[in-house]
Length: 285
View 1: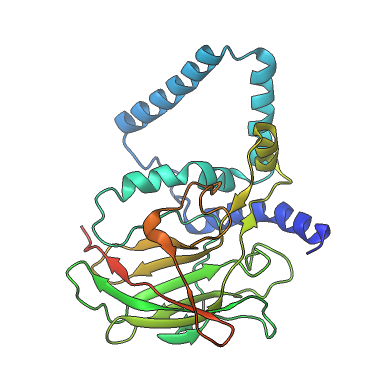
View 2: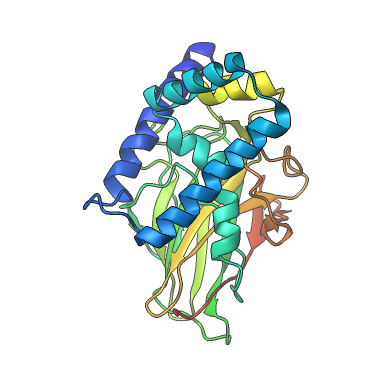
């Protein structure tokens, strides 16, 4: 992959993620999502935590002004969704799913797009004619926590390609490449043909990249499949599945890997791999 492609992808990613958030998740009324007392508690504790960091580390005015400049540039680059999804969301997800009894979930990340093509229970994700990468058959069953098969459950899948790039967030890729919405069969089963994705760097030519470089961190996420599983009367499960032995499974920049989410595809003898992974949904509260 050329440096030009990488730069174009990174430059466009933040703006695309911001636009997608505004379209799909931002509240349309502009009203707070919590009452005054709750907002007061959260805002006061957050600001107090920042005060504590400043006092404990004797932050200088030079450092303070650098922080102000960086915060402004995050907004200008459209990278607030990226920053929050990489470094904050995994803790929000941990709190939100603490009582989950079914399959473990993890962060959604900034690259989900609703409206992917509808596909039957046995299907192939949309892909280019000469899509590179190791073929993968991902199969399993969607059930409830009591073992009941969930016929007609919706399994939304999206993933990076063999270059670590996502359709709709990188140039030159068909709109719905490696994205689909699969409906399970009468027994809740699915079998999806795709390719194994590659690890990828989060965009590094914007403000988040500057933070990574200044802190001496790495920008890599391990290869993974994204899933969002839903059925009437059940809690939606959002998850990512990682590959055993893959690069950065142990040091994911987004801290989103959980042991229960690591899968181990096995060779099929036809230059591809397959893995069976069942998905268990909690009843809606």
